[in-house]
Image (cartoon, rainbow, N blue to C red; front, side):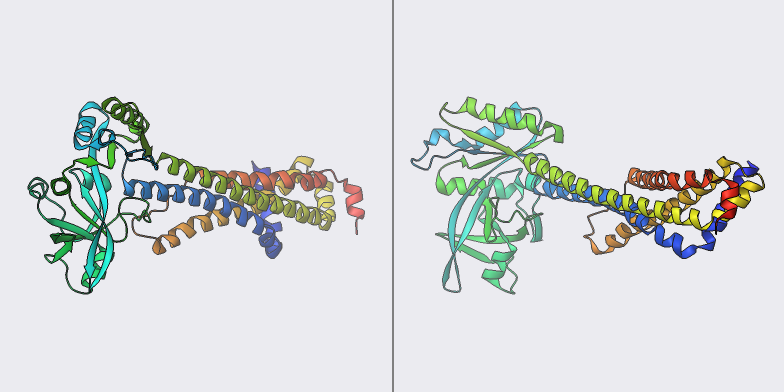
Length: 400
């Protein structure tokens, strides 16, 4: 134990004598270990962000649409109805909520100019599934849905286009032959960039009102929310089978989920992580070569010192251990500094990120960065250490 302490003390003194060299040698280890921590942090954060975006569109979401033929109109018997929606919820135990929408193009007059808007009739459950953000006013209440109230919610873009700086709440909005009262302004929780039924200039109304004026309870898109994330694929399969059983065999329904988007995002994140980890490992490899190079120079410079230590009785093992400890201190110290940098960057970045996005730090990445960095230093430091331990005392003392 005393010998180990003495060897450690000698190794530390040797590094203190060449502080700048030791710091420059450990620079590659600092970069490599920091990169490992940051790579894992970025991968976890991006995955968390993508999952959050998908859940904001609709948690555990499945949506079904009738596959339409472009060359001929579909018979009315092919169309989904409110009855299909309600029956699906009752028949499939893993469905927590269902909702249906029907959209159609409509026009509003803005300062003497006719502008196209997207009119959307929504059923009960739509807000629970899509989780729209009501910026001002209110959403439909049960009375609005049941009494076919001529009320509507409009997007923020449409409100600015029609009413400018005026407050649109309680104001009339005329579309076609019907005048609606605006009760709220809304937006999507996460923008779908026009890929959903909600466009920049959209109006949503109770489905019962749309059914009253069109005479049909046709649902163009049926939404179903699974109870748990693991039930999504089962709900997707069951709801498609259920609808086929209620409609003519020729009717084709397409059930979709956000799983494909999530899977693609995970694959991209994995590929990016692998590339960045490889870059970090290359940095560690270069730093290991640097450690070996500097240690070889150190052994040559300290040949007489090694000869004197051996002449007064130092064992081969003690010399080997001394230089291995030096390599460990260089790589381990660099790893600690790199890890601290890798932990500090996410903490600082948190102040510049949206409030609802937290940056997770993996404890495993910290351990891996330290172990790999130290292993690199010891592995590449073994050759110089072994060379130093193998020197003969007489030849070492003759070295100039």
